[in-house]
Image (cartoon, rainbow, N blue to C red; front, side, top):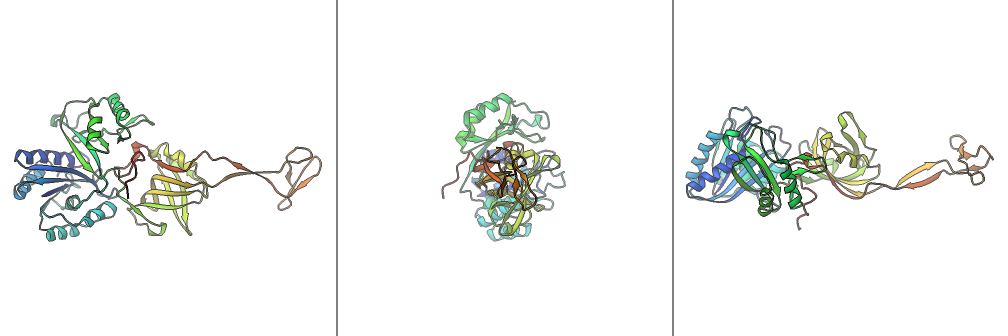
Amino acid sequence: MLIGIDDTDSPQGMCTTYLGAVLARRLIWEHMQVREARLVRLNPNVTFKTRGNAAVMLDVKGDPETAFWIACDLVEELADQSCENTNPGLVVTECKPNVAFYQNAVTDFCTLEDAVALLEATGARYRGWKNRRGLIGATAAVASELPDRTSEILVYRQEERFGTPRFVDRQSLFAAEAATFPHTWDTVDTVNDVVVCVPHTPDPVLFGIRGESPQWVRAARQVVRSEPPALEQIWVTNQGTDAHLLDADITDFQEGLSYRVRGTVEDSPKTGTGGHVSFTMGDEGHRVRCMAYEPTKNFRQVIRELRPGDEILACGSFKKGSINLEKINVIGLETGTSVRPPLCTACSKRMTSDGRGKGWKCKKCGARADEPEVQQVPRTLKTGWYEVPPTARRHLARPLCRPEPEA
């Protein structure tokens, strides 16, 4: 059977992955076999998400009826239903739903009505609490297929420590990154000297390490020193895969969806209030604004080096009329030039303009010239991919240290 759970956390605490990890252990205690624990990130632009818009799925061998009631009891026990926006959903199914529902949930928006109709058609056991919105994510989790997959080991705190300051040795996190990168990523941000993998919210997670396989995240985890954990779980995930990106033209954008789009830079990037950097990208007469916000830090300097005529591939979410950049591929660079008054061949002095459309004239000897001096200016920006730093990276965004999947 496949067990899906979503929307049990809140900004004040709890974590759906923690509930899933606890459920896995309770099922094992009941002599069931947990074959896989999966963490599924969905559309990051959903407005009513609590934090990272993640659902969990357990692939289990055992009695579905028993598993359903164990899971129901655990949701009642652990879900933070005091929060208005926490609306848990639970699915237990012996028949995998159509993968199209997952694909819509990660790239677009799904409705509760669609989720329930699919569950009914599949013959699944399911239950929703309050407005039951968590059934959308739970259904997407059991419908998911991950042709490109990564791993994350999540280390959870002892219950009596929930809500208190965490202790994770900072130096050991940088050591873990040094020992395992590029096979793990986003443990720390070495350029900005920031720890990334330790949350600041009052939930059960102590820290999490993402990487390309269970072996690599486990190896990095062994380097980390911290307070005593309660339990640990390695999750199979769609994180770091760009599963949320759709290939599109500028004319195809819809609010709240994420795209990979090609175009030409049309104006020089400008730095606005708060340090946000923006420019306009165009294609066949259509235009869209691209934004690199202040939290993207050094990525903004790359954007500032773009010039009109540069050809790029932009990746990011379309929100309020703008592409919020996650990374760009600089495909082609416009040749930079500088234009100056010509040099007088007789006096070696710079000429001055003799009026609009009248060319240039040497003040010393009276010599004339019709054309200015044009010189090529070398560009410091190179072609290739550029990405936001780990501190600003979304869960689903593929880091450049990951090779592209084989076709």
